[in-house]
Length: 249
Image 1: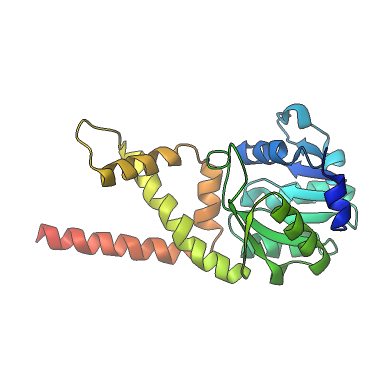
Image 2: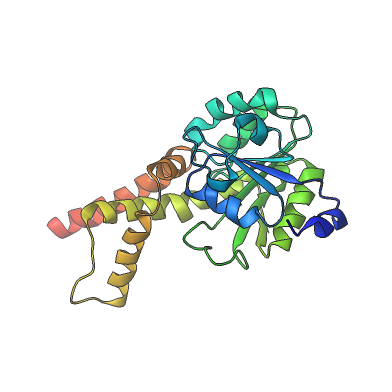
């Protein structure tokens, strides 16, 4: 750890960070946060690497970051609840915002919570966090904890965008929901590089290749966890169907 002087300067009461879940994003966070705190990772499979810890140890940290699929929130947080300190800050990093914050309010009503969405991951920010975007939802967060997480994120070099959970989900239904939907279809079509390629086609192949790095759980969270995404998908399908119908007539 090298960050205690900064944390003290901003009155950030965080020396331990617990990460619940050891998927690719959870382990990515552990690596990036390790210089700034004592990081502990819990996974039922025990694949938390050098950060592996018990559920009790992870739940007892100063900050707790759930890094599990949205459908696993209730089970995972219910298991953690007996070990979570009243002052532990729950830093939500889910790709959708309204539903996880509702669940957190229901499951952990007394803990301070901060709603965030890092718009980066192991593929895009492998070398550095500098300049990558972090969404923060102030209206769904407790003020003191929110300011601490914001200050810490800025120190990491992240670009902060503040918006409400509803604004976030409205935009992300298109930005991620539609993009992942199209990419998933391209991937399942088996789209691949060919001898003759235009720049636009290369972008489509790249989009399909990126989707191979996303888990099915992430895809399901983005598609099913955001109430606005289904309408965006349907509008796209309707337009494709309309265009195809015109071409076939």
